[in-house]
Amino acid sequence: MSMTEAGGLRGRRCAALPGGLAVLVAAIGAACAGPESTLKTGIVLTAARAYDGFGEPVVPAVIYVVGDRIAGVGADVDAPSGALRIDLGDATLLPGLIDAHVHITNSFTNEPDRDADTGVVGASTAEALLLSGFTTVRSLGSRNFQDVLLREAIDAGEVPGSRMIASSQGLTDGLHAAVDGDRVAAGDDPANEQDIRAFVRERIEGRVDWLKIFASRSSRAGGTPTYSLEQLEWAIDEADRAGVSTSAHAHAAEAARRAIEAGARTIEHGALLDESVLELMIERGTYYMPNLYLSEYYLENGDRFGYTAEQLGWTERLLPPRTQVFTQAVQKGVAIVFSTDANSGWVWSGDTAIEFDRRVAAGQSTKDAIVSATSRAAEALQIADIGNLVSGYRADVIAVEGDPLVDINALRRLLLVMKDGEIYRSPER
Ligand SMILES: [Zn+2]
Image (cartoon, rainbow, N blue to C red; front, side):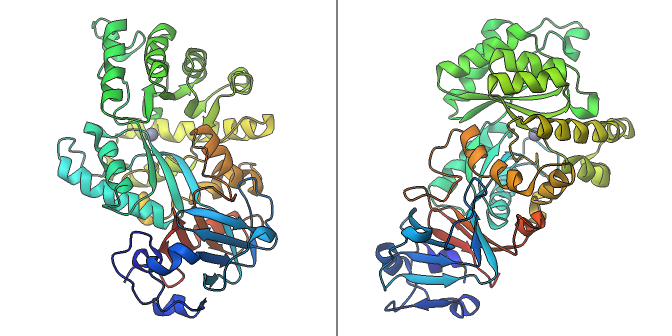
């Protein structure tokens, strides 16, 4: 049986506890651990230590959850004797992690029209991300609104998965010609205001949460700027009017500068950013969403992705500057957010948190790495009640083996995953 049934709120039956967890649980007065009992009395999680969304210790390391909300933290826990008690032992309790850049429906098949295929891939990816501790993810690119449909299925409880923020297909030169893009170079007219605003409105009518724009070419094509400042302004203004924030894929400093000046809230990748753009990000309060590990993954799996030697050559050349820009951003105090760009296969490994290891190796403190994937990520994504351990917040809680402040790779050793008060992973899995 799955822990969804044991600890769940929408559980269909009052199931017995799984053997592995039963050892750790003292369910006083509860004939079963099903939703009917824990909905009222709640669940008390205890461990050797706990850190909040600012990387600060919670003492004692106790979190009390009732229904889908946190009902008490640390010394403020006042749980009834009937509450379900789960002691995780030598583990660390943390807010559920947030990955601000994933591609949830991508697979290696590379056949864009196979909606059923991408639907299945998306559902399995969403579950893999959740089970690896990511209770919230932002999907930045998915064809045919597949990520929006998946988000709705997860919210409705039809499939297990991370809470999703979805952008669907982004604005790219391939769809709407950019002033500096390849299609204009080939003789096409650049997209005008009407084209670009219509594209954004179509996203909004398709119920996206965020707008994604490709302000530069891919890293596999050198990352040079595409859309003009004016074209970016049309898109971002149209999104702003609907209360939708914008994420800009941008490698070259000039591409990022245009996107920031046009009002993008988050800059993705940024392998070629310079000092002045990092300073502009601080000045404007723009969030930086780099990704370090993905290049290694592409280099290892280039043939499965169908990348050419020339494309992989670019990936390899941009790896050192990617890391240098990251280190510089850390030193300057740019608001860095955890984001992997994970897709096709990497997600299914359940080890997207390897990105933390590369970031800490490049100079980020373990404490800031935790903040970047919890409270700061929630702030960047504008979700008020996640990313911290506070009474009244959504009960998104994970437990990892060991202490991530000492060894960041503890975040890759998940013991428990709770989202909205429901337990999806327990020590037995
Ligand atoms: Zn991406």
